[in-house]
Length: 212
Image 1: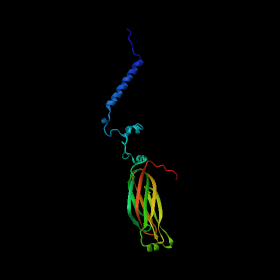
Image 2: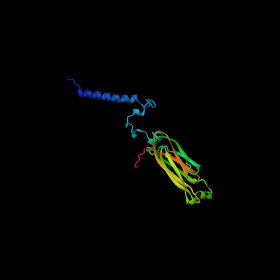
Image 3: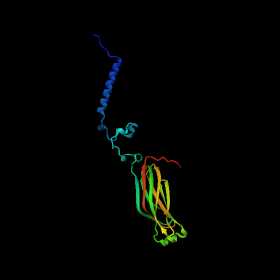
Image 4: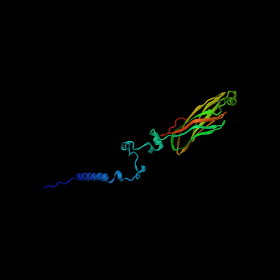
């Protein structure tokens, strides 16, 4: 009787089939999610692009787990606000800190500020004496976001007339470490007071500045 011998190609194919099948089965039984210690796999252990959004469970990664800049790029992230409903007041030509937003985390931000300036002299006769020759008292404010500044000014009194003015300011800033955002104000010729003040830092993904 003639014996059939498998060809070399057939032997190689059979060996490859056995190895691949055993390897898949072994991997499936050796490593499971329960066998991976918490925090034992770090970001450096995961190759870029190996985990796509399709492999993530819906709502498994929340904005609170993202870096502020990444959260901003996703259209969310935590905004920071400082509010001062009343005060302070200042003497004529005296610059006073009106509000401070402290320790804003590193990141890219759009920073806005608003305050209402008014004369601090309620007697029209005193205003008339201070504002002789038809001159006007002007309120001025500066928003300083870790070196990025914006200025605003508006009249708050003229001869025999006192009124309130809302000053709005805005700037952008990218910081590499926590920083303070500060609003200072002043007014010429008369005493003044501030109120309804706020500073808001809104995180964004990144800032691409164009122009001067």
